[in-house]
Structures are given as C-alpha cells and as structure tokens.
Length: 193
Image (cartoon, rainbow, N blue to C red; front, top):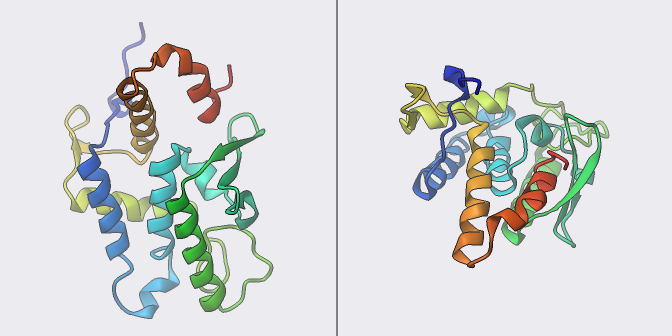
C-alpha cells in the first residue's frame, strides 16, 4: 500500500474542539463594523456548514443563496469533482444560521449587484477563495489544535473526515451495521458508487 504523505494524516476533531472552533469563529465578528467588511462575518457560517455537512471546502465556497431550500431543509451541492448536483438534508439550526446571515448581508451590503454567491463582503463582491480558509486556520491555530501526526495545525479538510466518522459513530450507537450505510455516505459526500 501507498504510504500517506505527511500532509495526508487525518485528524478527527473532538466535539469539544468543534464547539471551540465555532465559538472562535463567532468571536471574529466581535468588534467594530469596519472588521465586518471582510470575510469575518461569513466565517462562522462557513465553518458551521463544513462541520454539519461534511462538504468539501470548494463546495461550500461555491454555494449560492439559491442552493438552499430552507423550508424543506435541503441543500443543493455542485460536486467539484464530477460537476453533478446532489441534494443533502440540512439541520434546522443550519437553516436558522443561513437565514440570519442572509438577513445581515441583505441589510448591510452596500451593493449586491445581483450577486447570488453566499459568501460576499459588505461591498457586495465575492470573498476571495482563500480568505475564509485563512480565518478558520487562524482560529484553529489560536486554539492550539495540533494534529500530532503532522506536528502542525489541523487542516480545514479534516472537518470532512470528522463528519464521516461521526456518521458511523451515530450508526453504531443506534446498533445499525455501518457497512449497510457505506453507499449512503459515499453518495452524500459526493464519492459516487
């Protein structure tokens, strides 16, 4: 078997670490309005989507407001690898956070310019692809969450692995056979069959 590269070492966040990361991202928003002109206000929603859905970073970044069906709690996701849409359920709490974010953006963005991308700044322009990732990594590093196999901070992609592990843990707690649900998880995460 192929030996994993140093950067390929997976880290699974504990529930306590996930809660601290969410709180840390929420705290980015504390302060004056000028700070909110960047991706800082979008970062808490972005990290909540990553944690609660297991989506790839670019799948979250490419989301539009139109991808959310908040009434039916469904999210349409364009798979970055195979360019096909898949539909995944989302929680009531995530719907509430998306709605709150939309309210803030629609009231405070200076010019929306018919922008449909979810993550925009208050000037109405799409946030740079790496800006939110840098904010999340900054929070992870500030919390000193270290992947001992990499000897450095955990990766944003590790939220995806954490989601998959939590999925299997929930099946085991319900006394269900995880093997029977492998195809469900594969399709949910966009790996096909």
